[in-house]
Image 1 (cartoon, protein in one colour):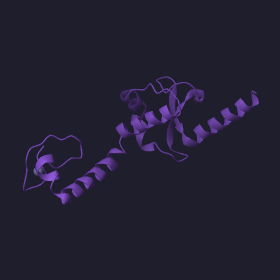
Image 2 (cartoon, helix red, strand yellow):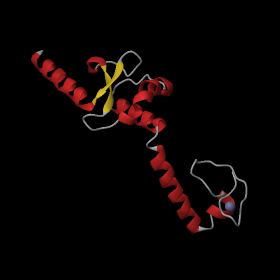
Image 3 (cartoon, helix red, strand yellow):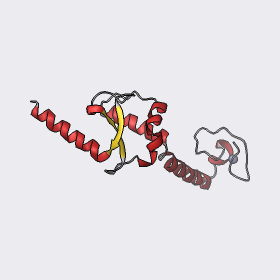
Image 4 (tube, helix red, strand yellow):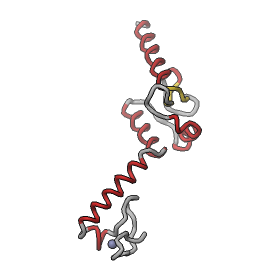
Length: 134
Ligand SMILES: [Zn+2]
């Protein structure tokens, strides 16, 4: 792409998607341009963080941290969410991805969408049940 500094306009190869200025002529020398690039990055990241690709990676990382296998490809994951994307969230009436019986991997056939409140109700019931099983 072309450098966004109107006095430069050198063609350069974008390494990061928010880069707007060429590395050699502009970025190294002009601090205001770096600042502007930081603004572009902040804007890019805040828009990106609302998008499915980003949310997919976050969920994948969260599952990994909790020691749960995550076997959904982005396309499989997106197929599940596609029609309900606007309802996805953290509040009780929002939708979350759940596993049947809260066990096993995140994979096709073992996940479904339900409200956050139903999901935490299920978790409480399962916890109670496992307490009584001892
Ligand atoms: Zn430049």
